[in-house]
Length: 153
Image (cartoon, rainbow, N blue to C red; front, side, top):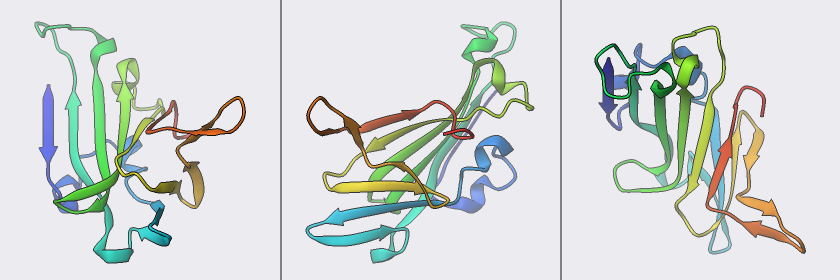
């Protein structure tokens, strides 16, 4: 079974998204330092954090790569301006055997930085990433962050 939604309108996702991922649909905030000015997303300059796509791939007998390990549910959120620009892309995933086991709460996050400014991403007021990692002598900037399980990060 495959199901996909591509829309910038949140109403299109109501009642469809797996509740384990839906838990992380709201509560995000991005703080960006843009040319010496602090920009809060959502909020400033008509910005928002909004869904872009959702899909479910549940393998069935006869499907190519038929294996529980190939199952996947995903929601993508953009932090930026609907329809034309985003600074951060948040991809939330449930993968493999956990897809069919609705009592397993394991949602991974792949977070991609699309803008060049310094940024901090929060979920429910908790810092998720500032897009740096510890280097030998100083912090190094990164454009991609992976969080294995958002329920325990």
